[in-house]
Image 1: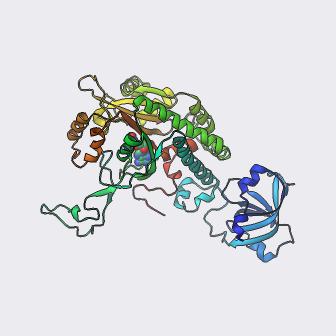
Image 2 (image 1 turned 90 degrees about the vertical axis):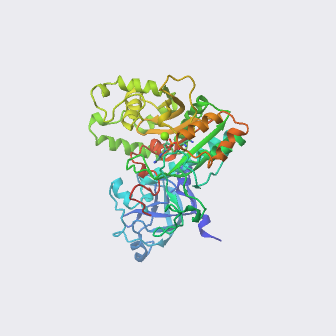
Length: 484
Ligand code: 4AD
Ligand code: MG
């Protein structure tokens, strides 16, 4: 019989709170006090179990090997604890060291480490309370994504990671090639000849599964993707990754308003799911954030605690405004009048994060959905709005801006009219002949359809309250950084 199948997870012990004889627990030592009390953690929860190694019952040789981060198998009885801090404790009858650990060399010392330092030892940071909480919440949110769409009859479509197209048309792609870098084959014009490459053409890592998603939606009605996407944008910020996960639902028979409704419902659903299923981990992070806030000067502190903020967002309707209204609010703001913005404001600008944050954090103090952006700053596939003023052509785009994050969702109704789409692509120099497969959906039974992309890490940041996106993905990929 396999001994590992018989282990009880600490989470289960904590939730049951019942005495029990003859149970097995396995985990890593967090601390060892008075040669007698072991705080053992198995990663199922931040709560440690107190293991009692009664003095005299175990050989000194074994006791010496119970060091921080050593892994143990403990067999014993779960009984009411006499000590403070826990209701139950595990009185050990057997202790086996599964793996020794040199506590002096172990990088996680029993003190508070900075998040920056923990990023350098990201291979071990899962073993801290903070990262334990973050990654269990991340897991729950990922599970809730599938639950949400499954309950609504969406088909989960796995779109390709390697593609030959640039969905966003922004040219921020990582090339995928097996050609020799030092001496690639060249064509008659001296350009690299991708006909010789692995796929017989130039290929890259996907920036979005949307285009393939549209092919699915115009057959299944409603699909979603949930996968990694890659952007070679040189943005070294607390909200950008070169490799991030995105959820992209795409719906046929759907307009920009239905799209907004779904996105709002989706975000609120994810938050509620985390609040119901990760209450202890959220309480831990709420406390952590409160302590971090205390270190800041009073005028820089956030108005809400983490859990308060999450409750507020699930209980209130998101504000909905047009881009034109957003620009008017900015132009009318004290921040603009006092020249507090670094970047200028006028109709037509691609709003900078300082503008988005002003709208969300100062003006509305809640999530805001902005629609009707200028066509000139948005992707080719977005539906042109009819009846715009000359020189002010807008598209049926929507961005959702969240407090503390900025843009968390980007989406649109798609241009389903073949002639308009082709004209727009030509105007933007997108090769229509290579995208014939995409245009076929508009040729054969085109329908109004819409969709959006939710940046998964930004969502995890929002729910956990973590300020830096590098702390909500296991191993961050950012400019000049690809460790682990
Ligand atoms: O606004 P974006 O670029 O939209 C698209 O990719 C569309 N194809 C989505 C669609 O309509 N199906 O990206 C969508 C979201 C952003 O709102 C943001 O949350 C996230 O993806 N995102 C990033 N997250 C982390 N690091 C980056 N470099 C990101 N770029 C975008
Ligand atoms: Mg966007």
